[in-house]
Image (cartoon, rainbow, N blue to C red):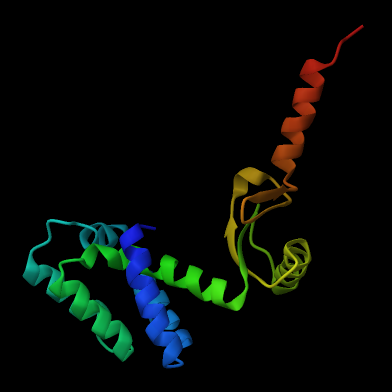
Length: 178
């Protein structure tokens, strides 16, 4: 996230909060971020040398049908030639929403897909570890072989099979034979 994206996200958040539109704006930014998940489109949106007309068209398409506050912000971004901010806007906005709600953001990696009951168990455990509400982002990482890796803020809880095997390997290599 860029410093500039953080500034625009804060301004958007403050206005959205004053108008009771935080959830609507967050949903629109999530939808826009989903559109920008296409690497080619994200790269295009992040180009600083994009012409004024191309930037206007891009922001117009991304803002079409969105909340008034999102459209207004996009108009400001277009006038100030700051269209590159769009790629980082959701991350910055979501961080402000979590901060306002007193939530901690965490990342969970599992070796494969997990069901809703397992997600619920992990969320409960993460909330206990953090001592407050958490919002978790789940992803699959087959390299873990099994188990779970949970990151809450700067703390990593690693219960993966890959890490345990690595630790066992180190103990075997460092042990004396004979």
